[in-house]
Length: 220
Ligand SMILES: Nc1nc2c(ncn2[C@@H]2O[C@H](COP(=O)(O)OP(=O)(O)OP(=O)(O)O)[C@@H](O)[C@H]2O)c(=O)[nH]1
Ligand SMILES: [Zn+2]
Image (cartoon, rainbow, N blue to C red; front, top):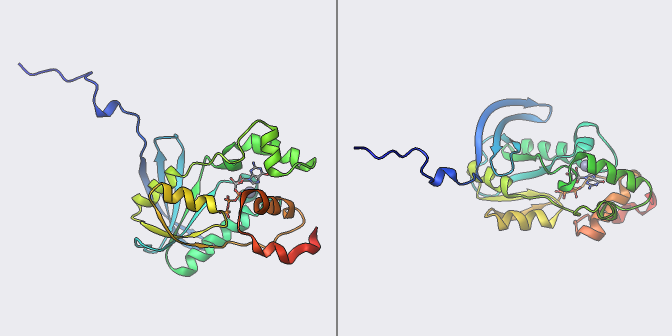
């Protein structure tokens, strides 16, 4: 008689931690012709999208890991420079002829979520800086996780990147997750009055490489 296997605990009962490629669709944009590759992140439950241009290959792929910022990316807020960085990254990848922009859902507000970010922004309007505001809310200064980003890059066949970012922690996180960072490529957006304090705080308190701020003392 055959043994009944239904209900026997096995590998399938382990929680999934992988990303699953769900869909690929052509995405013509104002910045160039991309493919949107949609993933389900089984570890955190997020829906993620990578925009891929051309044939990126495996090594030294021009890559941006863009942390979601609804206010900056969609509304054009000037309190940060995220929207301009996203556009600049898409332009850079299109100009290169190949590359990847991973748009990281779940990173909103450096990982604290949209409503908490808006509350933090309200505290910043009262004079706290962006680090103090998160702390005043009892929240981490930066709660972002890059595991899904690394798994998406691996799924796309990417082994090493030229990383479009001013944030050294993104580089460290990617390396920790097994993606080599051949180079960090600056993504510097000229500051304005509304985001100068935010950018200075990133430089002074979060070690971002923002040398162009030296040239804009007159805005303070
Ligand atoms: N908590 C908080 N998060 C913010 C604020 N403004 C923007 N963000 C979030 O910050 C994240 C972007 O992080 P940044 O530190 O600006 O830049 P970065 O992505 O680490 O570095 P780059 O790769 O150089 O762009 C996005 O998820 C935004 O939603 C704010 O005032 N408070
Ligand atoms: Zn932003």
